[in-house]
Amino acid sequence: MKYVLVTGGVVSGLGKGVTASSIGVVLKSCGLRITSIKIDPYLNTDAGTMSPFEHGEVFVLDDGGEVDLDLGNYERFLDIKLTRDNNITTGKIYQSVLEKERKGEYLGKTVQVVPHITNAIQEWIERVAMVPVDGKEGPADVCVIELGGTIGDIESMPFIEALGQFSYHVGPGNFCLVHVSLVPVLNVVGEQKTKPTQHSVRGLRGLGLTPNILACRSTKKLEENVKEKLSQFCHVPAANILTLYDVSNIWRIPLLLQDQKAHEAILKVLNLESFAREPKLDEWVARATIFDGLQDTVRIAMVGKYTGLSDSYLSVLKALLHASVDCRRKLVVDWVASTDLEDSTALEAPNAYKAAWNSLKGADGVLVPGGFGDRGVQGKILAANYARENNVPYLGICLGMQLAVVEFARNVMNLPGANSTEFDPNAKTPCVIFMPEGSKTHMGGTMRLGSRRTFFKAVDCKSAKLYGNVSYVDERHRHRYEVNPDMVAEFENAGLQFVGKDETERRMEIIEIPDHRYFVGAQFHPEFKSRPSKPSPLFVGLIAASSGQLDRVLQGCCNGHVIPTKHSLSNGSYTSAVHQNGHAKKLANGLSNGSFYANGNGVHA
Image 1 (cartoon, one colour):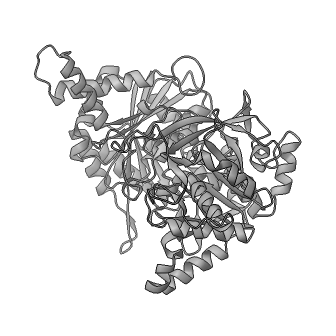
Image 2 (cartoon, rainbow, N blue to C red):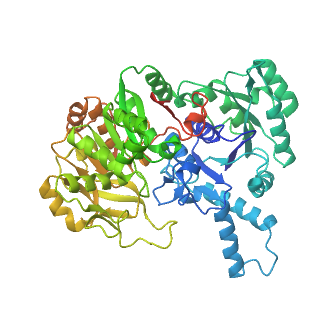
Image 3 (cartoon, rainbow, N blue to C red):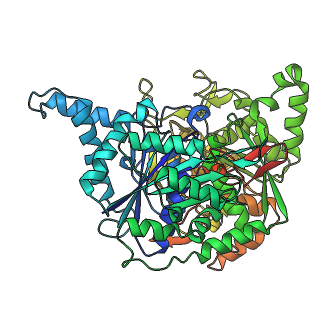
C-alpha cells in the first residue's frame, strides 16, 4: 500500500479537500485504484451533532456514517463508496483507546498520547486503507489521506506525530507528502510573497514531516523565480512545486495537476512509475468545456435556514450543478432565507421580506432542502404553497417533503391544525410524527441513517420514470420524523400521491402531485449520491421542469434511455458514480470552503 498525505499551512480554507480529491482523480486515471481517508482533529465522535453554520453540511454515507463534507468530495470525484471509518476524528481515536484501557488490554501500563494514541491512529489508517471502496476485490493501490486543519494547530499534534512515525514505519517509496500552502499577492506591490509558505514548511519540518511536493494556492500561476525561491528555502525540487491558481470551474483542478505533471512527481516518490500509464482525463476536459460554454440560465430558489453559508447545502448545490450541466443550463441559485418569507418579517424588515418574495416569484423552480428546528418553518411552508398553487416546479428534500405534506393538509384538505410533532408535540392533526425507533434523549447517531430501499408504487409517476422505470432505488436517509402512516389514505383521496414507500409500505418515501408540472418530495437525500456523470434523477427532473425540458426527458426515460442524462442501473436499483467537488469554491474562483459563491445574482462555480 502506498500513501499520499495532504496537509495545509498558513490559513484554513485553501482547498485541501479538493486537492486531495483531484490527486486521487489523476492517479486513478493512471490506472491505479484509490481510497481516501479524512482526519478531523476535533473531539466530536462524528459530524452528526455539529451545526452546519460551524462546519458545513453533514455528509451521510451508505453505512449511515455522518461524516465531514470532504468525504462527499472524495465520493463524487473518485466514484467510490466510503465508510464511516474513512473519517478519523480525535473523538473516535480516544474512544477506542479508552475502551481498550477499560478492558485491560494495555496490561496495566500508563496509557499516554505517545505511544498509545499515536499507535491507534497508525493502526486505524492501515486497517481502513486495506478496505476496498470501488466495488472491486482486494485493497487499493494508493490511499490519499487528508489531515484537516492547519499545521501548528494544537489539536492536530497527536496526528502529526503519528503520521511522522507512520512515514518512517512504511518506509521510503511508500509515503508522499503534499503540502498545500498560500502564496499571496499584496496589492500594494503586486508581488507573489513566499514567506508564509517558507514559515509553514519550516514548521512542518520541525514537527518531523518533510514535504515532497508543494501545492501553492495563488490567484495566478507562480512565476519561475518564485518557484526557484521556494525550492531553495523549502528544500523541494522546482519540478515538484505546483500552482493551484484560480480557474473557471472546479472540474479544471485535476486538469491543472495533470498539466503540471503532478502525477509524475507523485509516482516517482512512490516508486510507481513502471506500473502506471499516462493519465486520461477526456471526460473531465469535456465536462469543464461544456460548463464554460453554457449560456441559457435556469434560476432555482433555494429556501432554507442556513443560507448564510453555502457549505451548509454543499451536496444539494453539487446535485443542482450536475443536473443543470446535464440539461445544458447555466445554474443560478437565489438564496432565500425562509424566515424572510414570513409575515413577521414584513413588519420587522419589509425590504428583506419584499426581496425574498421577489426572488421566490422570479425563480424557474423551488427547492426546499432538509433541516432541523422550527426556525423558518412557516417560510418553507409558504414556499411550498406558492409552488403548488402557481404550478412552479418544486423539489422538497427530507424536511422539505414533510412541510409540503403539512401545507397540503392545511390548504387543500382544510386541516388548519395540521403540523409536525417536531414543531408542535400537541398538534391537532399530526401529519408528521416521531419515528418509533428514534431516541429523544441521545442525539448522535440515533436517526434513521444510511442507505435504505424505496419501492415505487405507481409505475406512471414522474419519479419512477426519471429513475429509469426501475422497481426500487437505494438512497441515503437522515431523519427522525416521518409522514403519519395513518393519514396516508386521507391524503391520497385528496390528490397527494405517495409513489414511493419502504418495504413495509408504512414509511412514505416519495410524494407527487400528478396534475402539477413537477411537485416532488423525497424523504431521503438524493443529493448524496449525485455524480457529475450520473446526476440525481430527482434533481434532473427539477432542472428539466424548470427549463421546459421535462417532457423530453421523461420520454427518453420511457424509451429505455435518459435525455440528456445517462443513469447507471444495477440489479434493478439506481446506483451512483463519478464525482465532483466538495470544498469547490476553495479553488474555483479563489473562494473558500464550498464550491459556489452566492450573492444577489445567484451561484457561480
